[in-house]
Image 1 (cartoon, one colour):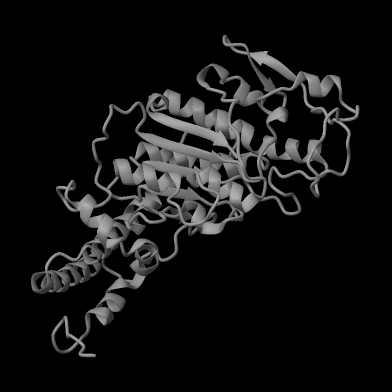
Image 2 (cartoon, helix red, strand yellow; image 1 turned 180 degrees about the vertical axis):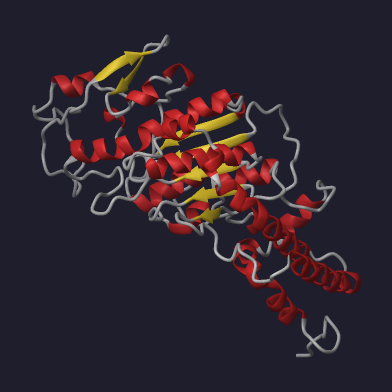
Length: 383
């Protein structure tokens, strides 16, 4: 097969990509190539050809950003926000109906919730004792008790929760929202996932773009001092890095001139340029020293039980403040404790899990409200 030389003599375009990438490679390669067909259809609506540019929806939006607080493992509804008085009343009695035989049916007895509920706020909604801080914000909440699911196995259930399908390969919520609305931020990805030490069953496909262009998949921010690999440039001077990007764009413009519009090339360059801008934006985003002592206390950053998720919630506020469209948070990982999936020691496990997230979630709601962001941010809690 005849090989076409796309870049002229001396150095191949592939080699130039590798040499110029340096510190940008790990970032850009996460979302390099868009699906040509979808990109072409979408590109007609984008004046600057950037797939992440903000777009006008079909209807007037009530929210600009989404923060998804995903509770991996699935908190039980009757122990959190959906009290079942009859379960409590008949706890210990034999179940009066036929139940399907599964590996989980180790008893035929009714088990009532060990937690007390009480009414809060002007709305009088009932909330478990597990969430006293969130309960104080109950008048700002909508508690939906009508949701059902067809999947009891974790991987399929996680796919269903994130994409509406129990099978791998569909676009995630974050991908759809970012695809439909773009992002308000030029210097950060439109869809960010704040990882906490353990990826839920289903893996990274939970945050994937499926058949949508790869640009819309979630960008993982890992816990620790370096949340994104290779964000620190290897060049000593930023001017040198900028010159490399200019050279790379000129090389690609030559390819476009010879072969016409190639959406993959534009997507590649767009992601390299985003990664370049992130080098300045990400360190500033993570610098929380400028936050007040009152804010640190609000989120519980000085307490061991709430520090990890509190930091994630604070970062989520800072992200939507900067125009990130969709932020997903994962619950803290505790060694020896399955997150929200208590097959045993339910009371102990739920108390530990709730203590880690209750104060930070309430802090996020209050902080968003004080910054004028709550009325334009959809905060979703579930698992």
